[in-house]
Length: 261
Image 1 (cartoon, one colour):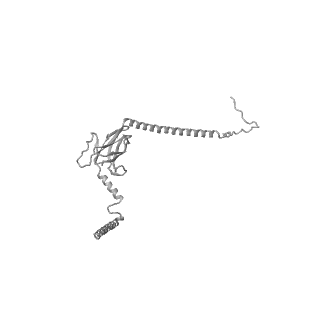
Image 2 (cartoon, one colour):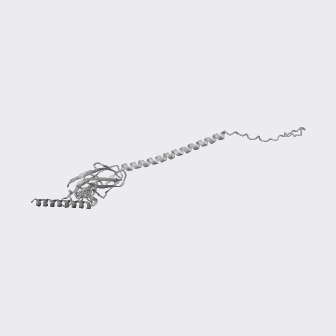
Image 3 (cartoon, helix red, strand yellow):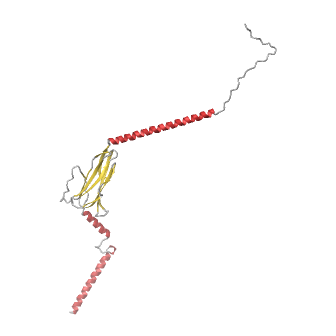
């Protein structure tokens, strides 16, 4: 009986030894000597990013801004991003209010979303935080900018929405620019200012020309006075006396006296 127990114990020890050797061999055969099922840190990071991306919801971006502005006037650019759910057809986002425009592309939500505005021909001052949480269905983020126009013409606003991974600076999605065109017309005050600048420019030119002419006149007068003073300082040369032939003396008194009748 003791022999049977000894044989069982020996067999169990041999099985455990063989299992240990098999585990060591399989570990050494994997790249870098790491266990096959472990993976690298980059692989884990990639898996986590893909999982975070798959967990995002669909979103709808809409905006409102006047299509026409007047120089010197202001308006408000408003942007909303609404979470529309997982996009499986089971949820419907709320309707966009009248006067708002819906962007054609999807803006992933269910995360931190940022919206930026780049303006050309306009001045845009942000009035809301750039990053806002849009985490669940029907939740929305709102952004506003104070928009002012200084000169007439065609201006553009480009909106870009960025979806970040959790609370990091890693951008999972960046939308294509959403371009908005705004027409700026000139006000009466703008034209009055432009005419004032033009008149001031003309008067400035005329004044400069008058100053230049006066300077030339003064220079010429001074040069003339100097030339006159130099002429008066030269010595005067007296003209030679006229030659007079003296009559020869008449010692004999032969000269005839004039007849007196």
